[in-house]
Image 1 (cartoon, protein in one colour):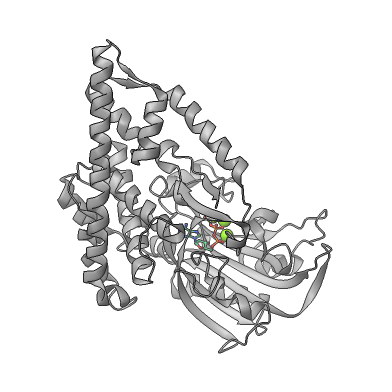
Image 2: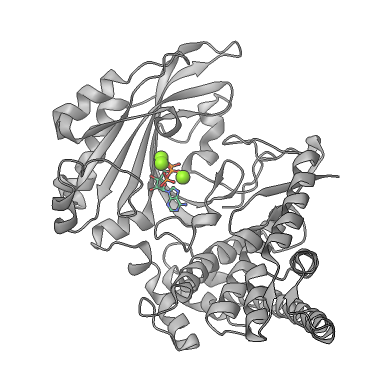
Length: 458
Ligand code: ATP
Ligand code: MG
Ligand code: MG
Ligand code: MG
C-alpha cells in the first residue's frame, strides 16, 4: 500500500500502480496474464475519497482492488466476456441488476466512441443495459502523455424491487444513487498520447481491470452497505461493546458515521504501519497521522470514547486477515503499541485544547459575552488540532456558541494563503515532487468536512 521505489506517489491508489513500468515498456512482467489483489489508499492526490468515507457506505480510505491484467496478451473481447462470466456465473450476481458503461467518444480530444466494446456488450447484455460514459468516467490516461484508452464500468443496482419499480424506465441510470454502485472498471489500453496531443494506436494492447473487493462482498452478500458485510462487522461489533451504542440504531446519525469512519480508518492505519509507514509529522507519515486522529476524534466526539480505544481494534483485524495479509498478525504487537502511543499523545493535545477553550470561555464570561470569536476557534483548530465541531459541541454544553462566520473567514484566509503558495493538480502518478519544493501538510477535514490538500513551499 505504501508506494515503494516511486518518488511520485505516496500510496498505491490503484491496482496498476505497481505495473506502471510494464505498461511503459521499462520492464518485463513475470507473466503476460496476472490476477491479483492490491491494497490501495485513496486519501491524497488525484484520488482522494477521504471526505466521503463514513458519510457514504462504499468509499473507503484503504480498500482491496482486485484486478486481472493482460500485458500484450488478451484484449477487449476476452476481458468483457470473462468479467461477465465471473460476476454472473461464478459469483451468481443477478443479471437483471447489472449494467455497463461504454465510452461515448470525445471529438474535441480526438478520442473515438468505443464501438468495439459497445458491440461486445450488446451481444451479452443487450443495448438497454448499456450506458454511454464521458471522458471523465470512461477514459483512462496515465498522464499528459503515455498509454491510454477507453473503459467499461460494471455497475450494480442494489435498490429494493419496490424502489426499482417506482423509477421503472429510469432504473438503469446511475444518478449517483447511493445504492447504484460501480463495482468493476475494465480499462482497455490501446492508444498512446503523444506530446503534441495526438493519439496513435499502441503496437500491442493491454487490459487493466479494477474491482473493489468490499463492494463485491456487498453485492454477493446482498447487503446495501459495505459496512454490513463481514469485512467490517467484526470491528463494528467491538465498537458497539466499547461505546454501548448499537450500529444502525442510533438517533444520532453521527454515531453511525463515527463507527463507519473508525472501522474504515483502522485498516488504513494498521496496514500503512505494517508496510513501514509510521505516523509522523511529515509527508506520508502525516497523512497516516491525520487519518488516525480523524478516527480518534470521531470516537471521542460521537461515541464517548475518551480513553485510548483505537489500538484495541488491531487484534480484531489481525485475526480477520491472518490468512490473507499475514503481516498484520506478524506485527500485531508493534502496530498496537504505535497506535496506542499516537492515541495517548493526541488525547493530550485534545486535552490542552480543552484547557485553552476553558480559559477562553472564562474570559468571555467575565466580559458578559457568550460567543467564541472566529479567530479563537480557528487558532484552536490550527494550533491545537482541535476540531471546530468539537469546539462547537463543548461551547453548546456551556451555553456558549461559536462565531461560525468569523471562523469561516479565518479559514478562507488561510486557504487563500496556501493556494497562493502552491496548488498542485495531480495525475495518477504525480502527487507531489520534492523537486517542486512543496511539502504535504495534510487536510483541513476537521474544520469544514470539505477537504483541501495544502502545500507549503519548503
Ligand atoms: P467511484 O466512481 O465509485 O469513486 P472510481 O471510478 O473512482 O470509483 P476506479 O478508479 O475505477 O474507481 O477503481 C476501480 C474500482 O475500485 C471501482 O470500480 C470500485 O469498485 C473500487 N473503488 C474505487 N474507489 C474506491 C474506494 N474509495 N473505496 C472502495 N472501493 C473503491
Ligand atoms: Mg472515485
Ligand atoms: Mg467511477
Ligand atoms: Mg471507475
